Length: 242
Image (cartoon, rainbow, N blue to C red; front, side, top):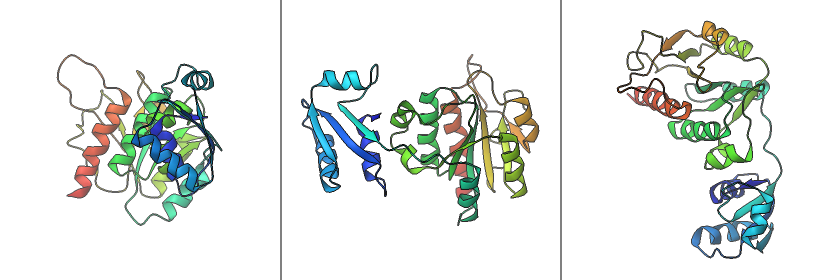
């Protein structure tokens, strides 16, 4: 089940729609819902108008915005898919790696930010990290349908493989002496961010070609991982446009 107007519309607009059935609160009559009606009708997808309480029961404690859909799951992408993506890239590789981000809200926000900054894929370990839950899909505002999300069984091995391809691995740590604005982020690049409150793991850091920190003012010691992703990815995008 996925929920939220953005998430459902993005799933309907995907080149290969995975939506099987949709429920919409009968109280909604706005343009966004009309768009979903049309997309569902064009694809012959069953759509039910129902009371909001039924939607509350279907996806408890979720902000569904009056729209819920039953879908075939998103394809699970792995190391093999990553190789295919990189082999077929026509641009300089630009990746985001999340080392153990467990909050689906943060994962969804990182996906949304990575797509907006022009990243080609987001990579994360399968274990002890969030996957594409309904919450992550909703928070991504459609990015989960469009941006490859790769879940790998051995992150250290993937990092070595990326280095063999000539991709520069740049980690983030407040203990680094190199500022984000001093780092060269223009070439084949993977930016690595760590888990909430912990940062990147030691083994991951040992594989980095470079480690940088985000200059900050005020008393805050760190940024939310999705905010840090935005700062780093858009600085890299700025440099790559020069």
